[in-house]
Each structure stands twice: as C-alpha cells, then as structure tokens.
Amino acid sequence: MFLGNITSTPMSSEPRNVEMLILGSGPAGLAAALYAARAELSPVVLTGLTLGGQAALTHTIENYPGFPQGVGGAELGELFQKQAERFGATVEFDSAHTVDLTQRPLKIETDNALFLADTLVIATGASPNHLNIPGETELTGRGVSYCATCDGWFFKDKKVVVVGGGDSALEEAIFLTRYATSVTIIHRRDELRAGVILQKRATENRKINFIWNSVVTEVVGTDKVESLKLKNVQTGEESALETDGLFIFIGHTPNTQMFEGQLEMDKGYIEVDDRMNTSVPGVYAAGEAADSHFRQVITSAGMGAAAAIEATHYLESLGQ
Image (tube, rainbow, N blue to C red):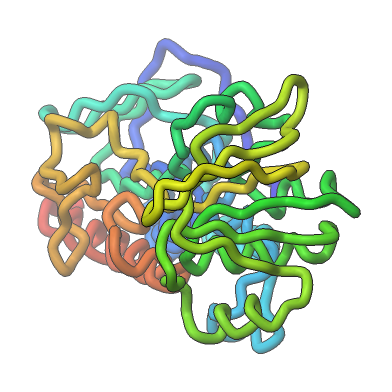
C-alpha cells in the first residue's frame, strides 16, 4: 500500500476542526476523499489499522473497470490514495476510538488527536470472521491465517486447507496454488456460493480438491498447525486431516462497534438511505460498514463518492 504522504500526528491538546473526517482508507474512504477534495472540503482520512482496507489484501482484482488484465489490491489502493491527495486530501495513520455524534460539531477522539468535524464519513469496513474453535487463536500466525496474499509465500511446497465457499475463499484458494502442493477446500454445504467463473477455475485446477458437507472442529498442533479435526454435518462422522496451514474465509463482521447506540443498525451494519445518510444528519456510511449484500470494490467506491457528494450538499445547506 502507498505510504508516501501518510502522516502520524503527535497528540495535541488543541482540537482539530475539519469540514470532513473520513474513517477508513479502503475504496469507500478514499473515493469519498477524492470527491470531497475536489469540492475543496480538505478532507482528512484516518487509515485505521489496515491501509487500503480489505481490498489491499487481495492479490488480484479482476472486476474493477479500467483494468482489463486485473490490478493488485494494494496497487489499486495506492492509485486511489494518490488521486485523492492530488486534489488536497490528507491521509493520516491514525484510528478513532471514541465518537460523540450528539453534539455539533461532531466529536471524534483518535489515538493521536481530537477532531471536531462538520461531517463524518464512516468507511471502517469489516473484519474476517473466525471459526471460534479450539486451537484457532493459539495457532494464528503459526499456520492459521485469514489472508492468503499476506501469508501464502510461507507455505511453498506445503499442503494447505481453505475453509469457505464464497468468492473470497475460491479466489484465495486459487492464489495459494502458486505456492502450495495441494489446496483442500472444506465447505459445510454440498455446493459453492462463489461465482460461476471462479467455480470453474477452482474445479479445473489440478491442485485443488474439495471436502463437502464438513466443518473444522479443532486445529491441532503445538508450535504450528499439524492437522485438523473434521466433522461431516450430515452423517456426524469425525475424521482427521493432516495439513500445514489453515486459511479461513467465512465472511466478515462490520467494524462498527463504536457507533452502537448512536446510529441505527441492522445486525451490525449501519443503516443508510439511497444517499448514504445515516440516522444522524451530517454522518454518512459507505462500503462494508453499511453494505452486507454486494461487498465489492466498485460498489464501495460508489458509496463513498455518494457520501461525499451528499455531505457537500449538506454543508452548502448550512451556508458553509
């Protein structure tokens, strides 16, 4: 991910007044920054803990318009950032931890500063779900992973398992065949949820095989993953599978906990209207913090752009 102009501001006792604060540096956040910067709102983007969001962890994005050969997730994030900064957006390595949406201006405390914002765009994205089984936490980083792009290289000439049946699971499984000698996809159903093209690629890949109607019940190992315990959900039969690595792709949970009780939500996702307005005037949400259905780079970017446009109209209505 591009780091060129990202700053880390020392904690100051003086509040920082901004017209627009954007939480999150994924496609939604950076698209909002681009549109807000072009409207001369001098937006400040706080990166959060994951530069570029989840998209930056994807090896190749093949369905973003304008890149017929595909584009790396980190590279696309870099392009987003450079374009936003070209028009005056500021990107800072910082994370919000407390918000007060009951006052004007909006009050947001971060690790490094206290912001008083006229408008707020929430683009905090989502985090990968865990299986919550014995051994998973203890062996995370020792064979258990949630990012093939990050950790695939460490499994060169080894056997790995992927859990999941959606687009992400198959995309990452296909990527892992670059390194691993074999990739076993374990899915709790007897058919995949991924798109047709991805299914075709996975089923035709000689390194990929499938275990259907099964779940992983335990990760076994001392200082590294050695095997998995499996259970067939139809027969109840239990078995063991030797493997060197476990990659988990079973969906995400929106990173919206700090807004609970202040914004209307549905199962953790911030509720927005067709203009990205939340239940609080001047506060907007975009990307996977508000989108439980599409969860695509292009839709997140579109939501971010819409949020910035609506925020601009809101400020104009206030005479700003």
